[in-house]
Length: 216
Image (tube, rainbow, N blue to C red; front, side, top):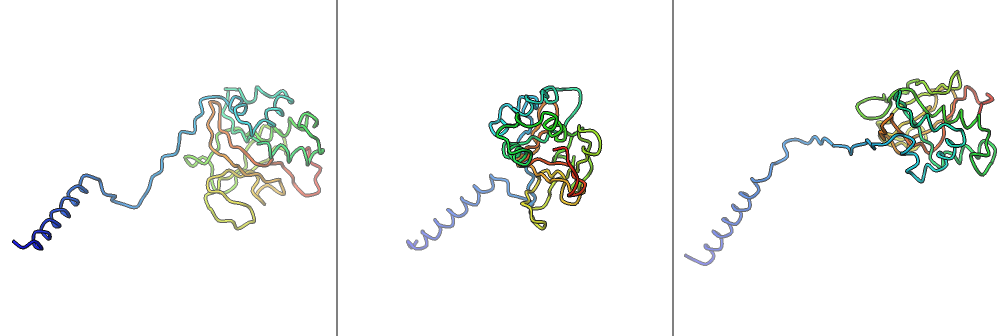
């Protein structure tokens, strides 16, 4: 047998061996990918989680100043907490009175701020708990000042001039709640033992018209 023929036969056997080894692996049968998100449950209550993050240190100070720790440790009902990170608290301080610390603000106004960012019920972007169209939700701030809308973003497009992130939570989407101040989450769907947490990069507030005198 010629050497060239022997080499050809050897090559064929090598190819067959590779194909046989590939049969050990399951081939993809469709194009659909089902993701498995990381477990969002943190195993501690909202107050403990707030204290664990450096970017929430100013909110910790606000809660302690207002004496509202019990709102974040309670277990009697499910609360959706909109945590305000340090950037959000700074915006509130600057817009309020140009003060250096949240504890220099009026305590009643800080209390109203915190109550407005707590919502009765469970609202998040998992399991279709929140629609893509804004809905009115009940905050812990009583009366008209407590009006807020929530929605979840499901699109990466940006058609209204705001940075859009798929799956983030938006409070007071533009035009959904009169002229209220809009806020969007930078972290979503954190599950403490007593509710849901979304971390916001700005504070939201109710405002019916641009000329309204607001409580904060």
